[in-house]
Length: 523
Ligand code: NAP
Image (tube, rainbow, N blue to C red; front, side, top):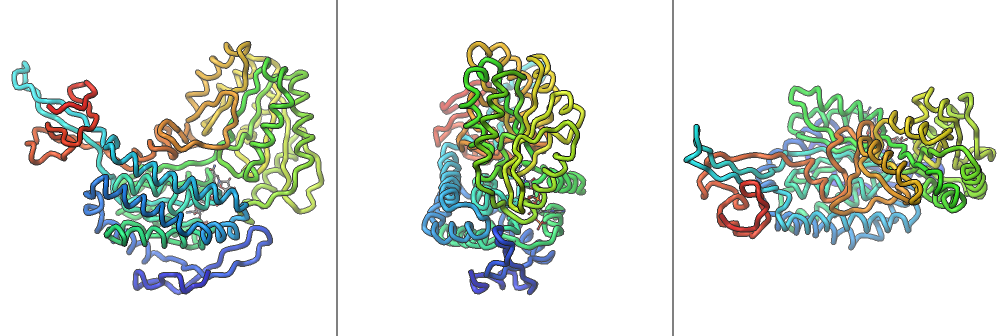
């Protein structure tokens, strides 16, 4: 990538500072200089986003669907160059990145298709009743409208699917919100190539340039000042609990507080119930090792906590996991920072009393998968044991009996997922656990593994804090659009002044709630 591809004059006020991406394999700088955006650039991006907001929000669902489909096509047309740069910047294998680009394209198309049924507007109508006593009932009709320009933070661990044209961008653009993307400094070249695809789609669809701006840089101020900017009306973030919390506090303490949709740390507890574990310990260990080491353990859904009852089944599970992990190759993590943080967290864990290292290969400077074991009581005594360690690491917690296993689940904080492995003989216990766990997580899985998040209408990728900062939302699937919408009701409006989805004739034939009944009928 050369600096000639960088649109340095976009705002006519770019600073000249640049930075380079770092090769995660050896820490050397990669070719290509990238702009260090400044406060001036934030102001400019926020101004152009505000200036075009009303125009963009007023586009039809069909126009926005076409725009998303055009971005998807641009990504497909530029697949080879995008994947190859993402490989250099992330150290992730080509096949994984090709799959991730496919997922990114799929997400854009999902939102495009879903716009067309107008369901996102959630049209609700209560007709007037002038004869109602003691006072007449007014005509009230509501639907959703775009919230305003939004800020989105690209994620280090998904350079494509949770970055520049990723799920947060796709859902916000679908909702009618201009997006200011704060690119992740680990993959600036990938972000810029995807930005060019979005810009070409904007131009092909005759939409204002202010609908999308990418800001890049390596200073913490870029992100925090973006969240502070008064034109920003909501934020989407994927990253660490520490930074997510810091930015959430900025978002909520502004003169005008705004919603902050942060997807933060999760250790994704897995429960191996007694009867299933006794019958299938070795097979469960195989599946667990595969899931825990997938993407070098850098998925927010990596199974990081395994709860099971002491006994022969657990012994077999531990031994088999140990055997499989001993043959794993060392891993390259996404950034030097993530590598340092992984090594430091594992070292800290190993210094704790009463912890058993299941894996015991010498480190020799490379990153190896790590598995630890601890008793339920010792786990309870130290809240740090519930924290996510980002990378190929997991902790097994041995419980005395079902009661202790349940007690621990009641004490859990919020996580993205919880998984139960059981057979029919364990169903009573599984039912009790589900009732507890559905208060804590966004997705409960049965006899599966949490890595791999289907992008569909029913997916909930969220959970109680600290998995997510807003426990009543999802960042994956078509439901993600609702983060960028707000409901508005219109009281006693004449037909001519109502939005078309709320008019009596229901010209689009969409599903609406009319006087409490779901209907496609005109009124
Ligand atoms: P991060 O450190 O939380 O950074 C995320 C974003 O916030 C980046 O754009 C970063 O860019 C910005 N940022 C960092 N410090 C900031 C500050 N003080 N003020 C304002 N903005 C700030 O996440 P990361 O770089 O992706 O990885 C670090 C750790 O995050 C990992 O080790 C892992 O624990 C966690 N993580 C979790 C998930 C998950 O899904 N659970 C995903 C990715 C990462 P600048 O540094 O340039 O400001």
